[in-house]
Length: 466
Ligand SMILES: Nc1ncnc2c1ncn2[C@@H]1O[C@H](COP(=O)(O)OP(=O)(O)OP(=O)(O)O)[C@@H](O)[C@H]1O
Image (cartoon, rainbow, N blue to C red; front, side, top):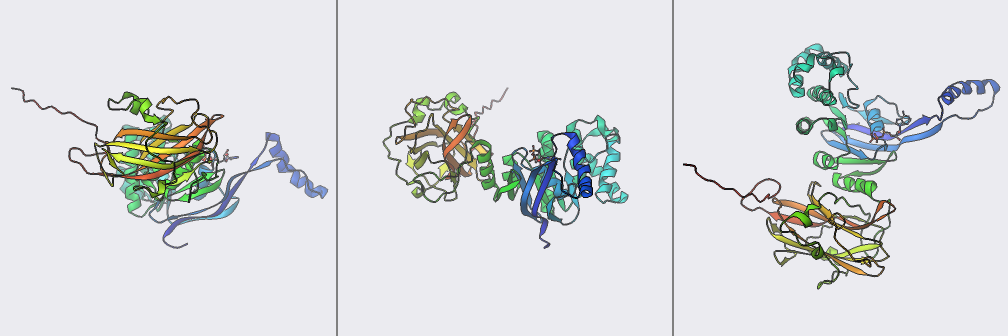
């Protein structure tokens, strides 16, 4: 393995044998011996379950690779194989150097031993001498920050304390490869932030990190590459934002691969991630009325396939849908200026997009999401979460609709991407008809007056008291 690769996973598969009843296990154990004696094959008492199937990827030295996937997709199995605690059925894993791992909570600890004893035990298992552990002990304890509990048996620890100590040991031994399986989710927000700071330091020092998480934002913020597992197979790997978008497809969308009709040059679609932002239309003083948000007639014709010709269009958008509806074109204005090359924080935006219904869609839902260039969602809404009233006939086959949104841009300077989508709910599933992820690039220019992520519109009074 070349020196710039720390983990190489080559065509790894893992098959579990599933027994319907415990006694089948015994039969399976005994009968092959019997078959030897009778000279003919006997039946098999287990079913095969392939938790991993032909998985290959690499973690380059000093990089953080995220592994994401739904429950049961094979993430933990993969990490255990990489750590060497589980043997693959076929395939190989090569790792370079000392491996630190944070797998199941407390899995490396003896519950009867104190924290102090466990630190020595753990670090010794990782190959450190007593002198090396002595030299790092204070750093470990100070990172864990669990006070006098360090001299209490680990069985008296809360799960948060356990993860603090486990992370402190792994992080302070400066491993060449660090494997983290969702363990950090247990720590509180402050500790998580401290851990990610330490992970960044380790990465800068050349540690390669394999991180399993269900958090999209951790993937886009901390990983240079990502791997998406589903049903034990890699369904996408590469640039984190793209992988996360595909993960969202799996979580909320149906497996629809047909390209949206009437649109050129696209591949896949994705689901709405716009939930939870229902405050915009209803609560905010400058919000437009719900009726004004969704306009079925518009002066602008937004139904020609012109989306990709507009200023601000992002040719790297990620798009898919079943084609029942398609988003054809958009219009953007900032304080009346059409298709502005940049926006200044504080301006009012008008965003319209034209949707053609190629087939009948019952109760279509229109969504808009704004993300940072790192993929972190800043704001997301959809017509359902905003409880926008729509007429019964909306979504007829052959009909056309313009969605009009007005919003107040309070973003900090930087680059943002707007995603648009039309979907509907069928039998409890969200069915994406056309999702155009990161389809419009917004550049927000610096403005005097605030720093940070958003303009929270502060009023400040200063009075001298005599
Ligand atoms: N020892 C085992 N015997 C049989 N099946 C197993 C065994 N261990 C795991 N599995 C199965 O393998 C599949 C993958 O499990 P794994 O724990 O790797 O998934 P995961 O992606 O880590 O899930 P989660 O997100 O829920 O932690 C699951 O369907 C699980 O039921």
